[in-house]
Length: 488
Image (cartoon, rainbow, N blue to C red; front, side, top):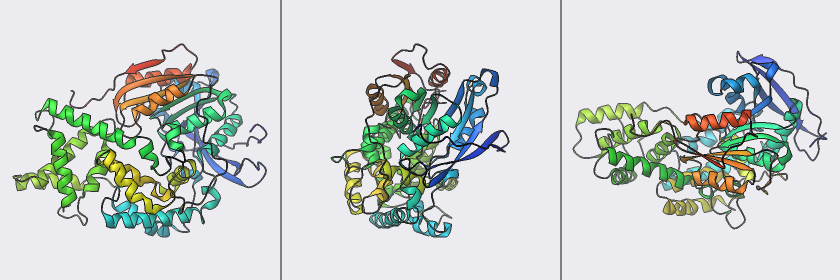
């Protein structure tokens, strides 16, 4: 990697308080002087340059979310010390944001092809499953043909290599990095590919790299099923409903003798008969219930909105509810915002990094099996990678990294996990902390996806570590989440 010339970065003012640049990097590091790819960067300069420690690279996860957007927000979420002493840099990974991949010739073509993905959160009904499978084939083939040039060079290993070259371009001897969610996997890949170049790597909302990659024996199990995401969502919901039962209706509007059974009844009613809301063209379905539940649990205080939504839905579907209550509940449900995602960018990473089943035809059975293992959320998570089937996604990166993931780094890696994280299971954090021989674990009982900014204790631990990664720390630090359900 050191033989690859570091690009000269020409910074221009952007977004009021930041600077932007574009780096031209090798498309294939096996051919460092061959075809190139443009990667977009954003930098927020250190406020105290006389005491500057270096560059803090940030990644928000996804995969598919923009690191530049996160870096631009640095003044809102980083500590004063970090803002004073580090330039904060976001590098949009290949295929993402300002470094985007285009799998379709026009936006209209993309919208038509991917329409089934926007109509339901996941395909619970057979007709929706057929539509999703067809759209997945179209997406996979488009990215493997029109978008192949970039889609076949989007593995996390390529992003790690880009980050290492840009580290040198910015003058840092070693990497300082903060990664959330999928960004935790990127951090682990970098730490294992370049263990001697780690100054500080803090990762939060942990993906177990062995589950992310998979093995030939587990390839038929969808990625997020391997990662335990369905179990994590189910565990968070069960805990929320149990706390609802304990505090009762005075503090939880969804409470009755058994809120879990009430949720089961609500799900069964919506599966049997979707709810038609006045003025809405499409009914509210079982898939909407499961998708909304998973989405709301991702937010640190999302349990408040979730309980309100479940109460509204119960009032609209249970016998004996007055027309006035039904009308008020329907108005609140219609006010929901639409969900947005980045299918091409996300797929380019997921489909390249991980091992997947041979055919899209296997997904309905795999999703049903996942749902039997973890009711409600097994299928929800399983369908997220149907486009990655080998007979659909044929763009492959020969330089993908698939381990080892247990190398000793020059400095400790900080691993952060939340007990009630509904997307990346807390078990992943424990497993990764055991896997990395030079690591420290921060264990929080936070709600939502990731502990950063959801627990003052965990946030302070992350910021303190990034400032001084070599300071003595316990092997495990236990923290309390700031927002807890039904507490004043």
